[in-house]
Image (cartoon, rainbow, N blue to C red; front, side, top):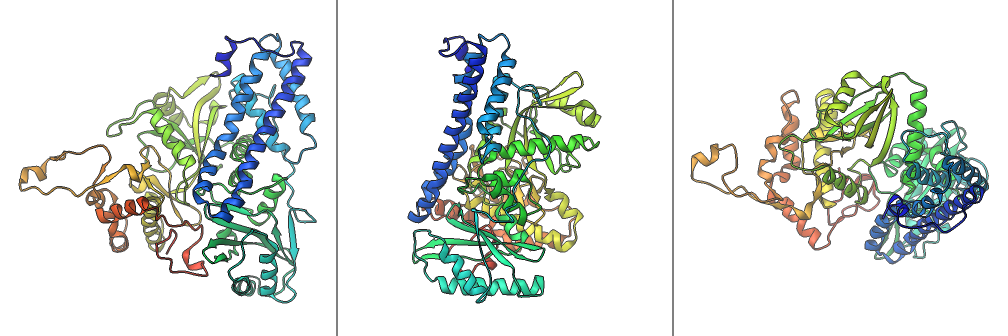
Length: 602
């Protein structure tokens, strides 16, 4: 039952004096935030014991459960607070007083940015806020402090290279208490040390090193634990990340990542969120930002599980960008979709996706089904192959910031979602995603070498999704994109489903020539039926893409066109024989040759 529904059915018990109500509201919202954070931290803290006991199913379940904590506690807080505002003539005045009191309550906290986001989440639901409401929200679009962690800190420890890189690496490994013995820490340290020395000589032309800073909190995700830090020399900084696996023989360093590109993929918007304990989230984000300067603050907060504050940071960045630019929202590059209207602000690296009012054939779905599929993606392991989407409600922008043709399209094709309110364009529901290069355009516009690499990675992307029990539904190149790292990712979710819900079939043979000529199948097709033999018909590249690229794709990934491949993946799922998903290429691993093919194996 919503707060509004409760409003007409129950009498609030609590203070009625406006000043007392304001103080009570501040205390109640603060208590809600503390409840949220405690539940979040409890699930985060369990990741260490899940890793120790190799309770991978529990780890996955906790990842899904943690996503629901913030919205559930916000809704309970709204339901508790909302009835008390009925008897107050000046609700907004009371809320402003509550805002002031709340700000005082959180002033000394080390996570006050998260508390502000929680307060605003409650506020927007209480007042059904459209756009930005300066009157009642904790609103600030300017600069804010983000500690970079470059000086003394309780969050990280520092080692120097005296004794050599291997000795330094071994000291680092043995400083972490993961409650499981190392299989051979000395051997792992030698491998890590050799990689560090090779990097220093190749990239910095020296073995000199001012120090290595390693964050004390351990990052957990799926079956891995990650030791995260940075190497420093003079004015240079580079990440160092040591992925740790818990194998049958104990802990093993799986590799070491030493470039911004490699570490950036670890924190990618195509990956599930980390479990990492941090009493000072801003300092943790600041440390990561110091070694990953291309990563936005929104992405980094989201990557460590604070996706609601990631949304807040993205929202603030968008409005700052609009205050300091003049470009208009325009249609996004790529093939227009039948389910979504997609647009972008050229100066802002994000696309906005609005569900259309009606879907033309052959699309056979509903608005709610589309939202359910986006929710599936949000809670599923994205394995580096699906773009994370943030869901927003009631955004408002100046009308003159929209290209006239785009605005006409939105008002015509998405009138249930987009409307005009004076000089404002109000969007009641929208998804945002990081912008990537549409694969169909990439294949046409890039050099032959890059196009071929993307085409082959497209095949690996489809196989990675299958290994993660995901069936994209549409395998057209227009539904995939290429990231700045050259990885192919999926971003069109209106037909996505679990692979286990599909039935992969051979096309029945017929002796009747007329059957072969019919536009519709002459045999019975049930919901969920998929015919891989038909894939080459719509997966083949257009004529302006060199034919040898398609031939190369068929040579490497021709098994995608067979029922044997897909049924084999389903059988492995049934046997729980699902590969691990490494957020780095297999060629970087210290121990290769796992029995089951792994994603990112190139």
